[in-house]
Image (tube, rainbow, N blue to C red; front, side):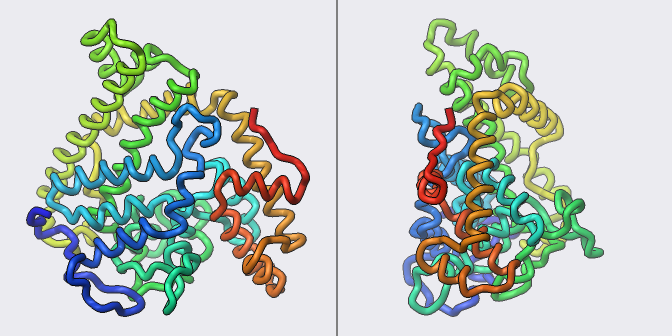
Length: 397
């Protein structure tokens, strides 16, 4: 790796891990985090979890794993250009969706509703539970024993959870902090009122760049839209017109790829240029300056941010709310809700999960066990459990 900037996260300056480990002669601490994440069970499960379109419908739609790999690649590209620590950016990118439920955001909404009496469900906090408690690979401890910086990035890559005065920040203003946030084991306080590292912020914006581009691609593969439907869309429209003008006789599949790669490239270049300006203007010289800056420093330029917001509105109207998408969404939400109710009533979960639930008399604790179990499911396993419990298997058609 090339030399990093003064404000990049330095593995030698890491606050460390909850459980001490000896030094590695071949890998930095952030590289070790990346490798632990890749080799985890939760990471492998992502290949069978829905992104937007149910994974078993075929047609090469993205799933959580392929999406995660795309986010990781984009994050590394941005981190390299800004002279940040690529390995930390990659570790956060690879782990940012580990807390997601089966059936994409539909499953998350359903589980959040079911968990409302017990503090709700938040996929970022769940990702921390996965890497600190639920992965049980190591002989000496639960969890993956990641560095403080990676844990911070998983929790706060979308921004702080609190204002400096203690008020809930952003999307937490209405419902308050998610349950379980006070019970995350880490070597030091995760500082809920500060922004995370630049590397974590890079992972967050890489997520936006990836799904804007690939949701268009998947929607076209699903036959919900045609490329020409995006000619008037913010962000995508000018690129669609450019590609159609350059390659009028090329088939739609190749045109779509040209649009997708141009969208990703231009978004990355915009982020690099604007973020470098923000970092310079804020006088950032250290990783601690980043946490004390009081604002996000990795961002789209104002014009691109406005266009990106407009594109999301177009995708929401033309893709996410299409009945072909909403029909399986409604059914998958019902699957998650039925599983939650059945497990709470009967504790009928396999293995250690069922044993733990039956031994727990506290309903809040029992609900968290059930949520952990459901959140860890793949789409096919959730359907298998629904078949076992209710003798019925939704087909999502």
